[in-house]
Image (cartoon, rainbow, N blue to C red; front, side, top):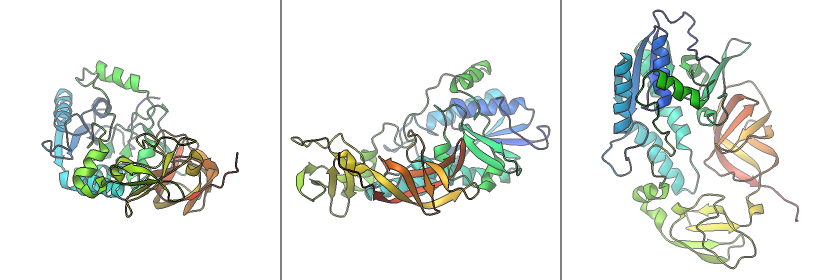
Length: 368
């Protein structure tokens, strides 16, 4: 599939704003946009002060990334703006991430960032510039439905699909957004970068949450919420003490490693986290089975579908079930469903919407 910006009036005289993180994907989008003949403007969000320990370089929109984005724009001969959104990012993403973790939930900060700072603020800035669209390097597809309205579909390459993190995109935003890489595999994108002579052609992809590039989520939460590092008890499903822990911050639902409880007849997993009592509740894998989950703050992009598939983790396959507008019930018990995660609904390749998992209902499994 050839990359397209799908501008109704054509590229001549059009203005395309490109969200640029300094990585290869958004850089290729800028190069593709420049080839259309439209006026192209690159915009990079400075999301945090590089000097703080929790905001180390090597991550999205840090110092090196801003420099890389500028170098790409200079090479392409397009304008480049850097917008300081540090306070908005801290309040809307980092603080919320830490608060959720402190409550024993499992947040998905990339989804919240896309719903807030990245799309709301960037689209507002692009519209103020009189742009015809905002283009990003996300691996998703914008497909026109039979009713003439845009739909959001998975990226064609399943290994790169990022639709799970974009469920919060509204219909109004989708009308303005473009995702020219959605039909391409990553190797072809790197090839396009190389052909365009972009310095970032071989730049490694970011692997962690941008504001925690070393993956030490517990370290960040402990710095901002010291109470999450207070030692407490590890108990079984009946409340019997099995051991101790060094703080609830070190655990998430479904976790097995790090419990350090020996002499048990079967492996134990984290089933529940109780910040108020400072307890971590553990049990066998069967105790993790979930029949249904409430979904909060739902954004819906489609019609009135009820029989859908739900994806509850970014790397998990969507599972079939029934959505009643407030709760999703799995056809078969699902494991690894944790409050705070995103539940994202699909009909085949099409993203229907999603929200944040709230309370879960355990499945009643037959004894083996």
